Image (cartoon, rainbow, N blue to C red):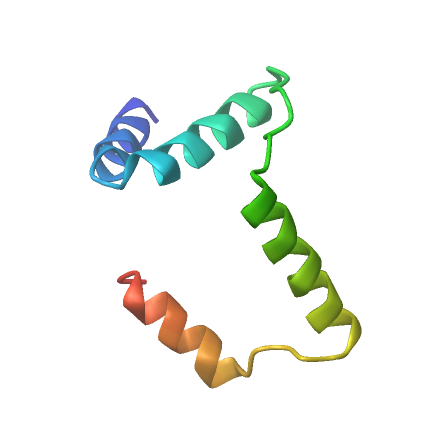
Length: 75
């Protein structure tokens, strides 16, 4: 398991810092270490509200759109 964890850290360390922070928070939460809530900026809060409204209207991404997004991230 140690090798797998080190491999994960290696891959994550090559990501942008904001993405690294997200993975670190998730890892700490999984380890049972509570994390403070993430403080959203006004722009992030507005984006979240718009996304929630889109979901309520049924405006969801198609399977092809989701695959394209994953492909953009090399997944």
